[in-house]
Image 1: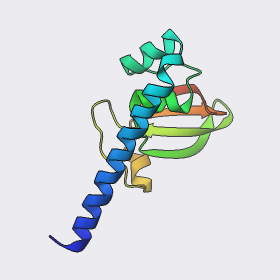
Image 2 (image 1 turned 90 degrees about the horizontal axis):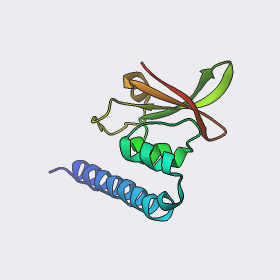
Image 3 (image 1 turned 60 degrees about the vertical axis):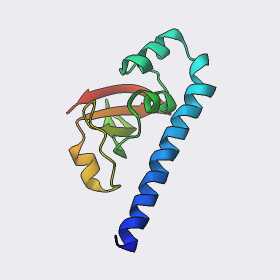
Image 4 (image 1 turned 90 degrees about the vertical axis):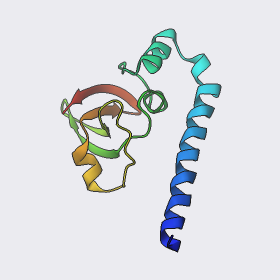
Length: 117
């Protein structure tokens, strides 16, 4: 196996481990203090207006892509996702944004809406 392929494999395993560790830490440290409504949404895999970005991360996992866009006449942060069950790794490029099928819109770090593409 080439050195580049080995290095890529090690980096990938490290990043996956970091993502799992981050999610576990959030579930341990913050989840118990969320409202019942937010807990149900996270457990059920759906969004609720007003969720913060950590809560969306716990619901859907890491985003494919983060960008800025207009939503209801406002400039907002947008997180893009694949359909439920598809957990392809983001490559960090523009293609990630193009392959997304769901977008979540944030204003000041809180969900203000979402849509399916």
